[in-house]
Structure formats: C-alpha cells, structure tokens
Length: 226
Image (cartoon, rainbow, N blue to C red):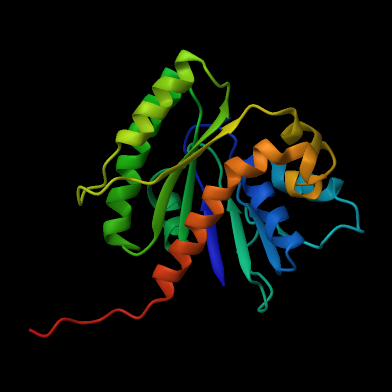
C-alpha cells in the first residue's frame, strides 16, 4: 500500500483539492483507494458525500475523529492533513507516509510560510522517516503573473539538507474545472479529457514522480561492505 500525505501548515493552500483529485485519479484506474481526512472541517468527507454511488468507490476515513484504519486490500491511502500542523501531530503523519506532496500558493505570505515548514519537515524526515519522498506543487497559479513567476523561481531553487534539489513537480492553474469537480464529488479525471486537457497535462509530471518515488522505495537497499 502506498500512503500519500498532502500537507502544508498554511491553511487555504488547496490540500483538499490535491487529495481528492489524487483519490479520484487512482479510483478511476481501478485501484482500491482510501481518503483519510485529518482536518476537523471535514472537507474531504464532504466531497465524498457529494460523490454519486455510480462513480468508482473511494473509502472515506474520518481520521480527525477516529484512528486511521483502512481496508487490508487498499492500494492507495491519501491523507488530507489539517492546517497549523506542527510538532508531534506532524511527526505522526510523516511516519505514516511514503510520499509527501506540499501545495504552495503564489503569494509572498505563502512562500514565507512554506520556507519554514519545509525546514521543519526535513528535520522530521531525518528522525522519523528518512525514506519518505517530498515534493512541492504550485497551486491555483494564474499564469503570466509576477506572483507565479516568483513562486516558480523560489520552488525551483529549494535544496534539501543533502544539497540535492527538492523536486518541484508542477504548477496547477487556477481552473474552474477544479471548482466544478469539487461540487459534484468528482476529480478532474472524471470529466471528458478534451475539457480538462491542460489540467491533465500539468498533473502528468506529478504522477510520474509518484510512480518513480514508489519504485525507489520498493527497491532493495544494498549494504556496502565495511
């Protein structure tokens, strides 16, 4: 089972949008998907309530109220985390994750908050889960704006403590498709491809990275002779 954590301590950055679209994408492809909502606002659970029974099923878990338990045959667990997540609560979620996606909005306030939060996550990864893969996604981007350019430049320049570049996967445009999908309990991957082609193209690199991260995590580790 793969566990993908969508996280940012800054509220309103689109964590639920990423989480629900990830869940919808894998469900459409026949995977057994659990969507774990750790946010007491319950936005992911509200999305599931709006989802028609004829759509590919997704198991909802109100993880803000109950321990995280998913069916044993689950292929993907998507975790939608709450805002203001720090310390022990953040550490516990990082422990559960194989992959972490961090959405960031194109505003100076969000960029400053992201800088501090990325530093906190990197410190935790050294202690609780050194193998978890972390990447950023620019969200609700209005293309050809100064704010979008500044965010691209910032995210593209972040380095991990090892000196390696922190993967910056994509910028997701501020598209009405996400709003229409959310209101119906759908992902953009459940609309006609011709209507969502620009959005799907932006997501393509995200899924390639997730697949590559999964292969790296599954590869046996070779010990060097001492």
